Amino acid sequence: MKALQGMEGHVEWAEYPAPACDVGQVRIRVAAAGLNRADLLQRAGHYPPPAGASEALGLECAGVISEVGAGVAWNVGDRVCTLLAGGGMAEEVVVDARHVLPVPEGLSLVQAAGILEVYATVWLNLFQLAALQPGQKVLLHAGASGIGSAAIQLCKAFGNPVWVTVGSAERLAYCEQLGAQGGVLRGEGLEALKDLGPFDVILDPVGGGYADLNLQVAAQDARWVLIGLMGGRQAQIDLGALLGKRIQLIGSTLRSRDDAFKAELLREVGQQVLPLFAEGRLNPQVAMTFPIQDAEEAFAELASNKVTGKVVLVIDPTLV
Image 1 (cartoon, rainbow, N blue to C red):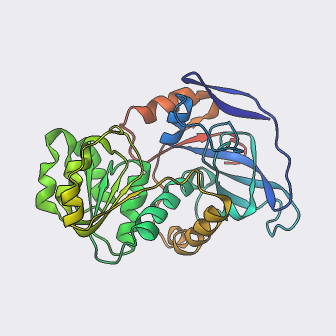
Image 2 (cartoon, one colour; image 1 turned 45 degrees about the vertical axis):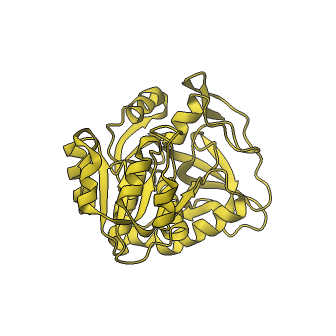
Image 3 (tube, one colour; image 1 turned 90 degrees about the vertical axis):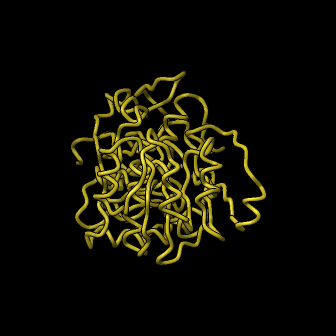
């Protein structure tokens, strides 16, 4: 089979060993795969996959089951989406059957390819780790990203007012259209957040220089969940402010979690989140699609920080 591999800062659609389908697994003929910042990092050599995971790129995809292992309730021909530690950008993937969910009613395989990584990340970090309660206020940094787009919609669905930081007025308008109460532009200074807070939960994929700001705008007993380091890995933190406000600082990654953890997380996502797509309360925000042969262009678009929502690579156009 062919798979997309990151090599010295570029990608190559090349031959790759096809995995065997074992007990408790399913083989999926991939229609499309979502592109995430983790893929950018892996392509650059900064984020290798966990031990035992595929070296090919891709943390999420959607397609049609083509083979089932023993002890699996899925059927050949089922339309599914899945969360992976790697290998989603390939003609086919073999995955733990517990990490597979049905494509929500009304969604195409292209749309479904871009939902699980972001919605599972948001559910884990806001609703499990941060224990977000209805009515509590949320601050999202990089609010127009794929994760931000998902978080805004989930916050709206579960009764949480949300504000964002973004890079342009157009991106702020996009977030407000999805349900954000408002926000501030990075280029105009983030200090205006003090007038919008304090915030009970902060979802932070930036890190770096945002640390002091987060401490200033956090509410008493706030939860600050750090999920990325787009702004750098070094920061000075006023531990007195952290202590005085009883802030919980939580570092979180999903990719390296074990299979049992991901299975339980996806069970909750399947119960609590996916039905909201069929109800029209959540909408996949696919900003751009690219054929897999144009993967370099897709990576460049995501790296530009101008994309609102998700970028999806189409791998098998006969399925979509």
